[in-house]
Amino acid sequence: MEKMSEHAVGLKMRELPGWEVVEVDGGKRLEREFAFRDFVSAMAFSVQVGMLAEQAGHHPAILTEWGRVTVTWWSHSLGGLGEKDFEMAEKTSDLQKG
Image 1 (tube, one colour):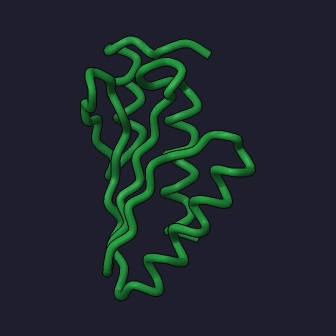
Image 2 (cartoon, rainbow, N blue to C red):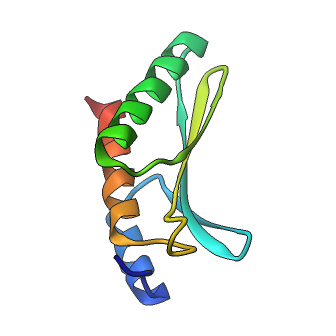
């Protein structure tokens, strides 16, 4: 797996509504906040994301708060974004739809 270029990241972002690229510690990350009606719903979603991550062997940062969950994907080994991060962000979005 290799780190994606700025151009490739820009192209992939067009296919990933609701997500944004943020920079943390000099590296790019994908981040999205998901809204829920209460804490229990937010926690349930967090658990689903965790299970998805464990199955894929690729783990995000998950911040669970009352009525919202912020999910951040990036590849530690790359110091930025790779294809797997975009794949996992899309799967995360699909969890809320499904």
